[in-house]
Image (cartoon, rainbow, N blue to C red; front, side, top):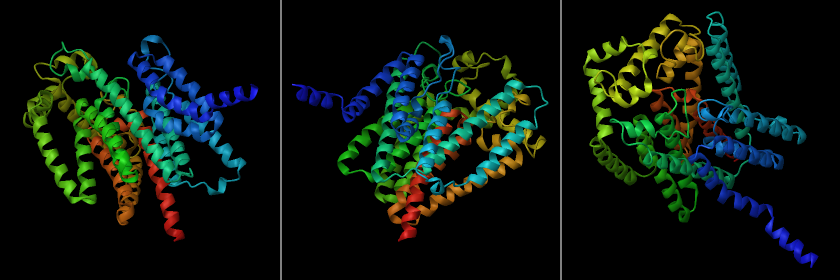
Length: 492
């Protein structure tokens, strides 16, 4: 009897079955908690699960952070500020993973095997960011200085995570599981976004749906709901789906189509123009290199889709707004004389200003931010105005262009290092294109960089925690594969 009982217990409580039940039930629980904005409960759930995993093995904790990062919310400090203030979960989890990982390496005497690509370049870049802030210590804006230092800490966190991922001993099967994890969480994110979109208020002025349903549970920035941040994440995951498509069995590709289809559909509904153009560009580049017939089909679908989107009211207004801003100097002059601090942005987002709708306002203010960015760069050419210190000199927190932001915040010193990093990233991507067996890996990384470049031209969303973390996780996965392939080719 005791023997039978022990067998039943071993079957019921085996680790494999526990993991299976968790994989099935966890996304559903997360979906429900996020739908009801129960962020404290979600934080407790994620924290408990992380502790269980990290106690088992640091690698489980690493997988948890890598795959689950899009689901992390700020743990609210008070109930009415669940998504606007709180403790950023990832900044606590990543150091714990790092300590556990480093302890494992020390105990196994594997420190000598740790690879640290770009370490000197990254270290110098962080030093420049710190110097740009220290140079502004006398301006009397402690809250801005604090934000700058916090963002540097966040960046260091993600660089540490990058190095951990690069130095993991993963095989082909591990890579598949990670990419599946990326895509499944992106699908879950898309489902929540779609629910929010179709349950949003519809009794507002034009653009109201977009204004009230920009997937508020995810990828929030200092501008609160940011469809471009959400769209960029979905663009990243679309490219991850393409990589997975190339390395799985054909029988599993139908699931990739379903998951990626939901991701692209939610991207479309976010009305993020830059992200949509980035995905179209990525698909065209991928199919051009891999399959010319697929390229022609993709080109035809893209043209038809863009024509159809033009007749969608919101998209049509956005296209028209570009020409209105470019062709009518009075629009720009009017907005140059408006103090953004005096505006009720929630009202502006719904109803516009002085007869101009939110789409024209978006374009006009963005041009104003660009002008400010250029002026700040000229006035502070060496170390800039300080990392994340634009508000001390300008009405805008960013210049709405990542390259302008790096230039005006950190000067030529920071911009030159930033461009050198971009060069190394591009070089490593193009090297993979030379080998027909590794083309899909090279295209993956180059498409990620293309997406970053396109969305960076009209915004600085990569400054903000969660999306920046997702980029460095993707970078770590790519360089892990690159390192393994380089070792293989060297041994051959």
